[in-house]
Length: 68
Image (cartoon, rainbow, N blue to C red; front, side, top):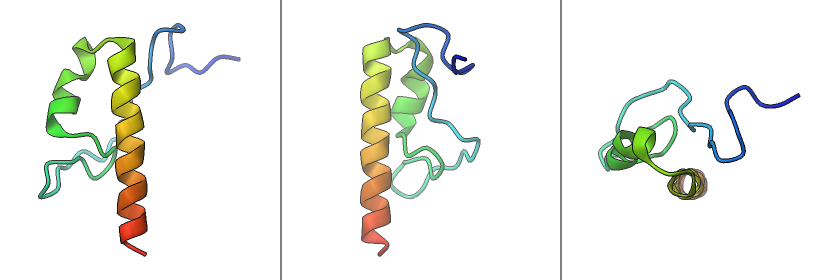
């Protein structure tokens, strides 16, 4: 069964988890995207979306490591 958030091979699911609030560094505390990345999401290409997701995962990991 396929993921309902992904419509085709070129679609990339949004990392949004519905916790939409920007911190002091303009990153969403839920998905770790920047304000610019959030605004760009709907018009971004699949490649750009994959880059945004990769960067948001790296930000989340860095934040988690710095909290330890």
